[in-house]
Length: 333
Ligand SMILES: [Zn+2]
Image: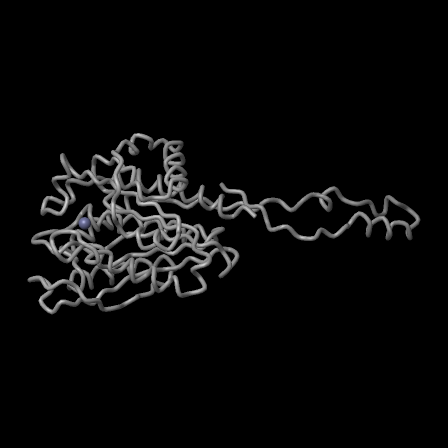
């Protein structure tokens, strides 16, 4: 449970009113101030969202069952339709953000351009449009590779962010506004990663949001990527904002998931970078060692059997407890 201190307001001096009225009456017993009238208002208690790892695992099975999901593919269209349907069932209103971008010419992209679609859903905070805002995001596309279903890379974080969206929506209202985002086009179209051929969706979303008034309320961006690995050891991602990373590490460790913070330290370029470039505190929750020597990464070996429901449970709880700490920090007056 969380406590929330309401914004300061001018208290009405009830004791003075009571005494004045009582002075007019013969018996003071007829009108004594009640103790409750002088107590400060009780702090608001927020409910605790649930994370259902069994449901997240079923989502991951569904997503992997779609097959490859590169940008502008039938698989991506199915992916978007599934997320739209599930977010709507959760009581959210998913929004599509479509755009076209030039991309390198490759056998998969002979025209040198692609149509992208980000999907996002807002859960407005208790203070309405003035609530502080937190983005919780993943990429949903898979890399243009033969027989690549991206169980871990693209699939696992999509399943977890969807389940987080359900959990927080069911526990609304929250002290902050959440925006759950599923980015398209994180993966480079070419086999290698060379700017600007990557993070098409997050760059577009960050730029569009930066032009809107909502942007002033954006206080943090938490990204999940490659978090389904059976052997989940989160990388200490060095582009991430230190206080935010430490907040999630502390919350996750206190919740009993400390062993998952045993990864190496590394800088990883990912969908958080466009937000970092705008001055937003960011965190990339990623395990960038997938199999011995990262050997399953971007290969047809990235399959469901390399992932586990236990890892989805761990990352779900780490993210949940971290977000609850962030809510506390952001709702302090
Ligand atoms: Zn990837």
